[in-house]
Image (cartoon, helix red, strand yellow):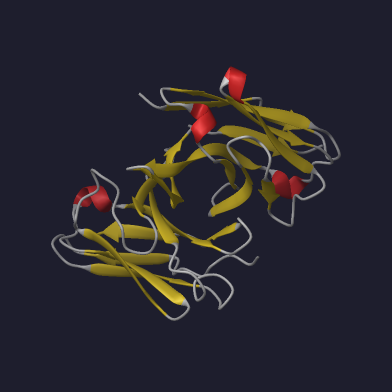
Length: 123
Length: 110
């Protein structure tokens, strides 16, 4: 069974840092692009960042570029999001998500999501 | 990278069909037929319903269908059921391995 379990969220002051982790199981983690997606309270989803299977390509939304860094450790089946210079507007539930792959191909869609971890940025 | 525009709410009676729109720009929805749709029940993680415009993952009911015209993608739910009551989010590929989500739509089954 595919499982994605996020951890590392919590309350942090503006300007502070947090490192989120996502533990993957039930599939060959190193074969998949992975993403972080967030959802502010009562709001829609927002794509945050992607990382290629080998970690060699990374992409992120403009609002976090230079502050957040996505990374992965395929030996530990884990995805990470290092968040620095946090702002109030970064307050959200952060989900890790797996790109959808089937029948030997991979597609533009996220088929498995974790349960999310809440990050609250407040003084 | 502005959010795609969705109606805040859509409602319908059981058995009816409803359509949720998702309007972007020529840089995202208009340039690629790569919109995905997600269903999200309260307090739960999103579930992939449609990918790459109109394709359904295995296990998703054929009552859900996707389409696109110009800069607007649409999700149609036919034969509306009580369990379809949820939030729905669209997401488009926006080039250079980036994505943009919609503002989200609350579907109410009357």
